Image (cartoon, rainbow, N blue to C red; front, side):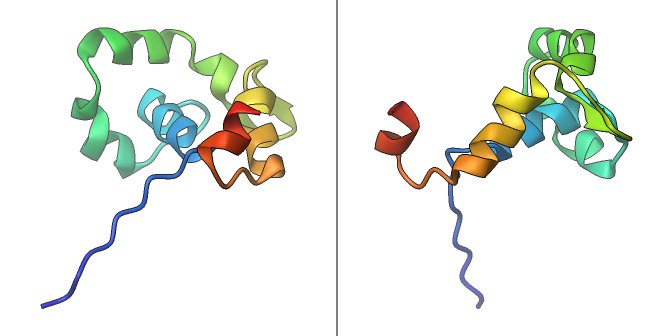
Length: 84
């Protein structure tokens, strides 16, 4: 039997998850698989504001920098670093 190790990342991965569910700039099977992980109201809000999260082809929404790119650049490795 193989063991499965799950790891919770505190940085941009969750934002990528939400952006994928909102289909913010890209299409994937991921959204179809995990869209039931958020409430219908929350999903509708994500879809409504997906242009603010999306990026690609030289363009980015106004929230992409602070929610996706900056945390990835900072390489935060603890909750304390995130809080700081």
